[in-house]
Image (cartoon, rainbow, N blue to C red; front, side):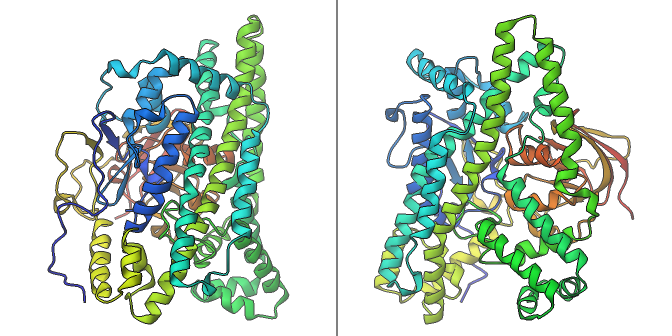
Length: 591
């Protein structure tokens, strides 16, 4: 039984030590990776033994660091306090110092947007490294010379497919075999994130070259527009498939009636139907789960639901999207942006025609940026598919342990630390109550707001002093006539009702043309971009997921609007300019 009187501990069981060498961590842009607290099993297994070392490997692969510069076996590539994921600021800044033509400020803007809450860079003599600079330069030259996706991406996608095909019959495994296989599947995140780190940085190289050149030629906003509607973005393809399903639902009285009757149980009722339109919908929906079933909220935690495990998640999106008119399809929305992009690329190259060297560098950067934006999203899609393989063994373990009464709920298996898996398997008595209490504490963490910045040597407040998300917000609401400034990352102007949300679960009645105001997004949000008139994020940068997908789908997007969710009241009518990076308040919320 959970004891509600037990207060939160001052520290959480997965809190990480801070690094004296790389001392600054931030929640800036962290919601894209971890919007909610990570489960103890997810952090202690997936992250500490897979993703964190894999990311360090990636920095080494890029040439930016030597392996000896990290602390092993858990390198200081990320932080975790109160279950919440924190990005490493200092590490990226050192890379910026060492990268030819780079700087700490440039790295900050590319990955965290413009936010004054993060302490400024303080030079350290260890940051300079001519040898590392030369290695990065050689790697960047390869990236800028790319004309097609690199072979290592093709190999990785094939490897992930093989992992999926080689998955054993999980219900037939013993508990010990499930634990062993689950660990193996999670260890695969190390090579996964070696590659993902490389392609994430690679996706910033071309745009960072295009920006200054375009500005010098009189096109200050070109870096946003020339990477719009480029095609080949994996999560945009997911949106296309969801869109097709929404058209089937819109055209079918039977499918529409079942969705109107309630999302819970709807797919079961449709599967049992003999209606031809319902059968066509179910067939297409099953294809969606086969291709995109690995997607879902909070995708980098093995405790989170995937679409294949909770089909109601994509079905709910289809239900909302069916209200959108046919002329708002992804293809039609991208037409104007494609034409504008092609025109602007021609104008840029023509403007640089008098300088053959500059024109050549510009052409290479435009091509490279396009290739690696596509590569980044394809690589991320494959990486999330690998995460599904990492979670499925523990989903099965949680199911059987809950049936036996070892744990109270199947999800409580994720409340274990990796080292505790063997302990509970050997002696299951007493764990039921212990994990139920831990789950209650974990749920309370999700209701609190973590500090935005953690710095080595500075105290972190006890968990009980972290403010509640639902608490009073000490910020002045924006009123009609006010203009909020952020970073424009997807061109276009849109007017509509602001729908202020804390997470995907809050979006239950999004109407066509509404402006989503959120912290940030992940790929599970993408289908809703087809309903929204625009997107505003508290945090973000040009290479954020919301930015890339908004550009691809032709949705105006402004990121790095400080405390947008607090300053904009739900229901307020706003105008956003995805090129200028502004959010203007037109009318206050009704009532």
